Image (cartoon, rainbow, N blue to C red):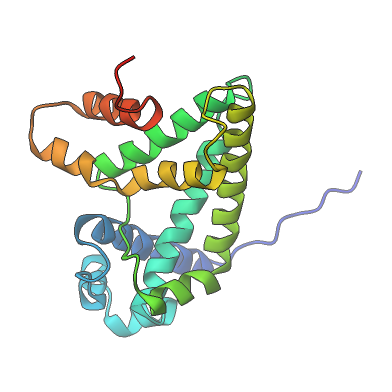
Length: 205
């Protein structure tokens, strides 16, 4: 029996990969804390502990930094979806996914990007890791939405794409931050309330 060996990764390559991950972790945190416009490349380099010139060897622009953070987020999302129980109903899978994104948001781990920035948008579109991840996640969520609609668990009159964007919006919902700043509710209580308004609506039942 012939077994193929994986190519050995050099120490230098390992160090470069570790540095890139450290950069992405810092960018992710800064994007979550202050957003893209307020984040600076100097700040990223200082937080990582490297010179700005070294940072540019990994990511040539601020937009590329943001795209790398979003690609990493998509990897996390794909891993989460992979770990869901196949026996769960489509609606339960959607609820679990939305809860996961809200916990990232409340934990200060959800990067925030401006919706109107043509340069950033072009960089995101050109980032294969981000786009492949986004398409995969959207396809899976879209399929669950359509299944849930067929089962009557979600209003079938709603366009599936509108439901998808509504669920995506929970990842950047300012209501989460407002409720957390009030110090009146725990994270679990906040998530329960926002999940209820998202999936059950505001009308009394």
